[in-house]
Image (cartoon, rainbow, N blue to C red; front, side, top):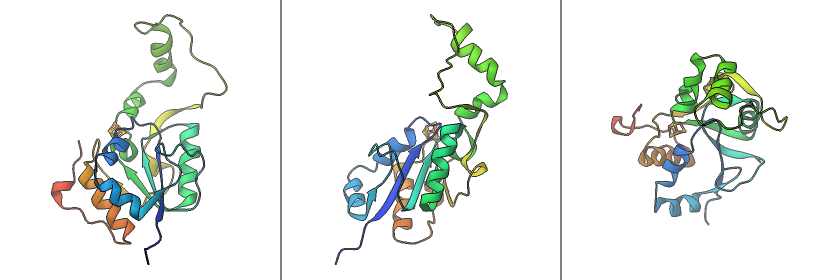
Length: 180
Ligand code: SF4
């Protein structure tokens, strides 16, 4: 009898979707993946709520109130949580703004920056509230596994995913670990 598929949720917080693209770079192994797992909440399914999952995979840092909400939902729903990519692990690109005052950043982007035609900081209440700083996800929730890289290679992601799906601890050779 076929083994039951495990459920996996993924999300991109303050990220560029590059880590999700790297996941898709496993190419024909995607066919193997769909035999082993089914996707829950994910940018790839467009589901907006998370149900009980074995695995949650988080790309991106935590830069606004919605990021905090989504991250906590994944933590509550997933037995194991994986930080994928440098933004989730240390803030990386979105955290470049951390050296500056948030108000100054908004002023530069929306009021005084090059090419601005309607100088006004957006104030729509539907927009998620920005945090003063971008945080790595482990500062907000407990994280079980980290996959470094910007983005990690498809081979690295595959090695970690298959180990976790099989119920094993991922052990990566040096060749699959990078920090760029
Ligand atoms: Fe994009 Fe790199 Fe951040 Fe992944 S780690 S979300 S590829 S900037």
